[in-house]
Amino acid sequence: MMSGCFKDLTIYVYALILIPVQRLSKKQKLEVRKFCAHAHLKRTVRKITLQYDQVLAHTGLHITQFTLLVTASLMGEVAVNDLAAQLALDQTTLSRNLQVLQRHGLVEMVPSPLDARVRLVRITPEGEAALARAYPAWRKAQEEVSAAFSPQEYQQFLGFLSRLEASS
Image (cartoon, rainbow, N blue to C red; front, side):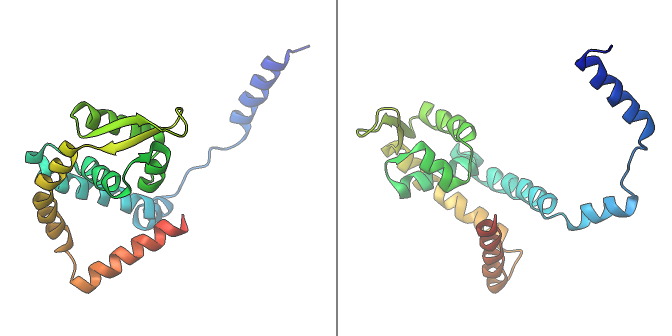
């Protein structure tokens, strides 16, 4: 009599032999390439991120760091969880980004006075100064990106993105 592990393996092997391998047709693959919202957004985000990063390079900030600092500044002293939710980031990714900003003195991490287990993020005066220095470069990158649209199209584009974000 076969033990459970070997029995499961035997069934798996028979399934591999007896069940024909399913493959996508070229038409299905082209459909994914042409219509997949994720693929289009991911490619576009990579290109736009590179564009912003190139323009911001002399400031020492990446666009992800710039937007994180802007959000932290707007929210004031904020719990890491709340900041992660606002930025739609998982805590691990946010923590990695915060460590870099903290190392450069742009943010501080302090325990909450209400619950010592909760860490609060606070932008430092150096962080505010870095934002002020980077803002003109961000404006330049913003103008370059939005130049692909008429002003009305750009507002529609942002509206479409907001609708997608809200529906997820």
